[in-house]
Length: 75
Image (cartoon, rainbow, N blue to C red; front, side):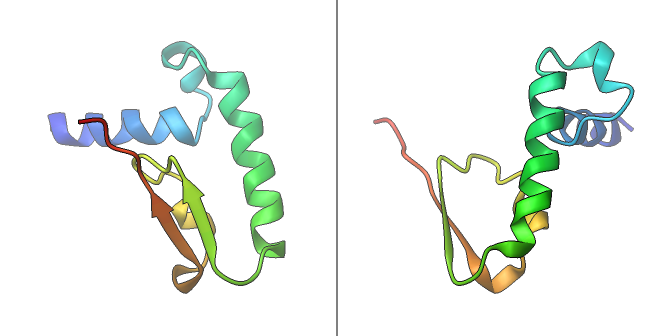
C-alpha cells in the first residue's frame, strides 16, 4: 500500500494533477513544463539525448528507440 502511495506521489511531482496543488511546491512550473514537452515531443525526430535525465520522468512522451540519457555522478 505504501508503495502505491509513493508511486502516486512521484507521478504527481512530474505530471501534476489537481491534488498536486497541495503536495507539489513546483506545481505551476511543472504543469506548464509537461504541457510544452508533450506538445513538442511528437515534432522531434532522430535520436534524442537527455542530459541530467535523473529518473527519466518524461520518457513516456517519446517513442522508445529515439531516446537516451546521460547522468552525471559525483564521486
